[in-house]
Length: 174
Image 1 (cartoon, rainbow, N blue to C red):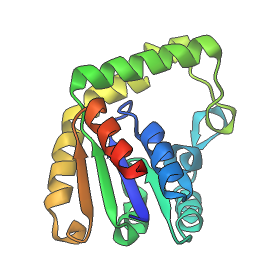
Image 2: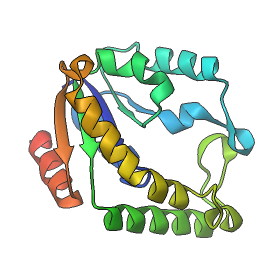
Image 3: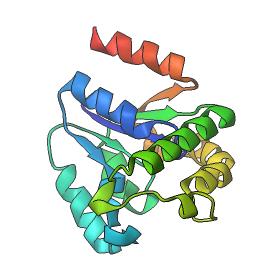
């Protein structure tokens, strides 16, 4: 394992797990959200995002976290492992809600100076709403993608709970 992709519904813990994997494997962690978001929650131009991703995955090894299908063709063909965090909806909603609340209270800076705000947290633009409405679609999408011929080269790790993830990471670190 030298080139890994960590996927899952928003709030599943992709960034946390990818960061831990990068440390264990001694490779860079590439957070697609940080390449995608510009100031004032503006999305990067698609070609700018693609160039940023190309640059980030030029190295010998990496762990990429994120679900951005417009750049999947730049990442997945050279990846060797796909890690799918496929936790129960109740778990994902708990994680994304508590994370959002913590970020609002602490005014944590995210990418390009962006911060989550109380108003947005309760709108249809909310990451909480996004996680809820994309959960089932993501399950269908990753099931289909892992069965597709173009991903046959990937070793897949399908983790269904944080406890299972912790055990797997613990085994890797030994």
